[in-house]
Each structure stands twice: as structure tokens, then as C-alpha cells.
Image (cartoon, rainbow, N blue to C red; front, side, top):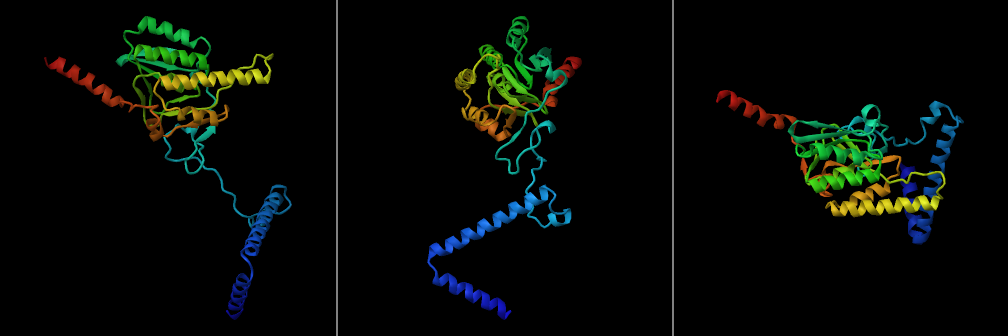
Length: 287
């Protein structure tokens, strides 16, 4: 005890007798020494210079862990702790999602659009609307994205026709798909629906110089910003896209979707949609 008191007194006397800059210099050197020790221990453990039992003495490195209660499908789960940035590896679509987008007319005036937006998808979509547009009220999206030009054309046609757009519960709309989604006059996202964006990338022809490809990407980005502004979407949506590498995905939280005006209302639950039809059928039977 007496030794501890003596050390405390000596430290107090030293701090009192040294200028502030000497104290700060001492603190800085201590921090540098600790940092060097941590890096050395980590390097030694990584190269097998110390045994597993010795490595347990090294400072613990924080590990990334998948979110538990985050409103996204499992394929988009690996978030950073805290949730301030939700950047994950771009999911690789398979099955129907990897194929060119197809369209299916469902009950309730819904047109289901499923799959990758490929060059020519906008023409196929326009042809579908020309045939069945009188029955369509909502375009339901489940897509990993794809061609930006086609996504912009589809979104503008949706706004021209005054359709709503929707991403159903558990489905996702990524990459250029949110551009299509933004075209809806009313935009709905179901529980656990994931909507994410990333940078646009120019498709190389093999002959274009890097500078030319960058120019193309910047022009496409400008078109997307202008389009989102025309659709009434907060341009912070595109800031998140430009901050995210094209092989990653930034997924919005539900409150962000609303605050950025990307979503205007929640999706109507399937049970609620079925209730009016069931009630009508019951009334007709009774009459």
C-alpha cells in the first residue's frame, strides 16, 4: 500500500513540475508504444510466430456480426454494428432473378416484374402495358437491377401512367431497380422488403479509354439525379449510391425510405387485400 502511495505522490509531483507540453508529449509516446505493441502482437499471431495460447493474450479485435432484427432478407444481412452504414456484398441472383425480367398480371390490378433488368426490358415492359395497361394499377418489383437506361425508361412510363409501385414483404429491389420503383405515384414497401443502391458503372466495350468510361458513368449518374428530382425523391438517395462501390450495396432502413420520400406508404398486407373481396363474395351469396 505504502509503495502505491509513494508512486502516486511521485507521479503527482512530476505532473506538477513539468509544462503541459511535456505531459502531452509523454502521453503521446505512451499511446504510440501501446499501438506498436498491439500491432506487433497481431502480426506475430497472424504469421504463427506465437502459439494459440500466447495469441489469446493479444488485444481482442472487434468482429463484424450479422444483424438480428434488421428489416432485410437473409441474403442482405451482414451489416456493420450500429447500423449507421448498411453496406453489404452485392447479392448474386439465381433462378428467376438471374434471368431477364418477366411480367405477370395478377389479381388486384398488380403487374409482377421479376428478374434482371436487361437491355430491352423497357421495351418489353412498354409492350406489356400497351396490352394490359387498363388492368394495371400497381407494378410489383422483385429485381437485382441491371440496365440503368431501361430502368429509367420503365420508371418514366410508370409515372406517365400514374401507376403505384411496390416491393412486397421479404422481396428486394436493388441496384437500378429503385429507379423503377421511384416512378410510382404511390410507393409501398412491405415488411422485411429491402431496397438498396450502389454506384453506376459504364459497361466497357473493350476499346473505350478509362477516361471515356468515367465520362459515360458521370453522364449516367447525372441523368439518374435529374430523374430522381423529377420523381420527387430526396437526392440523398443518390449520395448513398455514389458512396457505395458497384460491387457492394447500401440498403435503406424503413425510416430512411420514408424520410427520403422513396416510400410514401407501407404495403397493404395480403390479408387486408383479401378481406374486401371475401366480404363482397359473402354479401353476394346472402343476396
